[in-house]
Amino acid sequence: MRKQEPTDTSGDNDYGVPIPGNVLPETSWAKTAIKRLPPEGPLDFAAIFGRIAPVVLDLGCGNGRFTITSALKRPEIDHIATDILPMVIRYATRRANQRGLFNTRWVVSGAYELLDLYIAPQSVQEIHLYHPQPYHDTKESYKRLITPEFMTMVYRSLRPDGLLVIQTDNKPYWQYVQKVLPGIFDWKEQKSAWPDAPQGRTRREIYARNHGLPIYRGYGSPLAGFDAPALEKWASSQPLPRFATSGR
Image (cartoon, rainbow, N blue to C red; front, side, top):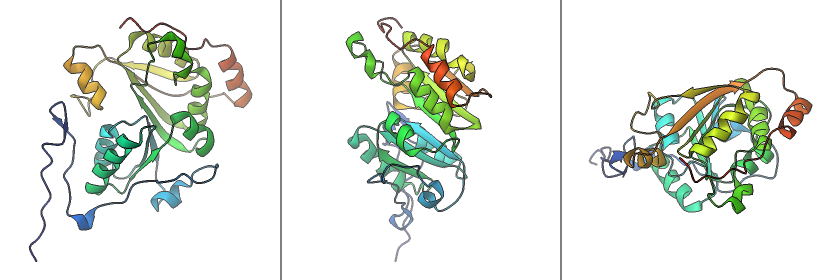
């Protein structure tokens, strides 16, 4: 029987930038879909992945570029990627399966619901949030993900030495992040492209760069000393994201 060679995936790209990795022989494919979340309660990462390892969450993962890239470069780390759109999760799952990325799982879920119902306190090493929907119509501002309440859920989910990454190409959204996040995170702005992905970590980032849009990036770790009552007090003192998003 002729040996099956990896398939060239040069045609699998975002605006001309290839999705990393090759399609492996089918015998090496993974099964990475979480087709149905269990009853409410903390996910058992060790049972899901069959090992104990740091866990990265990619919230609103889109077509999966960041998670696929990170999983290929960091096989020692497990990744859970979510999006509310079943179609994009199907495409991302297929790509991960064909690349043999056993250290990834893909699930249709909202970011808020995942953190609220399924993530145990201080159980996640990294949370990545790339280009959350800004909802330009101010009547829909209540749908914006980044709120003080949501940030307390992110804080609660991360390990004390964990990492939060946020990126957007919407200036008013970024200004809101810069105003609110330093209250509970040691927050830093990433002035230039991410060194690991100079062409872009996500499809949206590549699109924005191609169209000359500014991109705003930041990262931080939880500040010490915030228990549940302190987080609730902080959240109640912060403004909601009711800004207009017309400016960039």
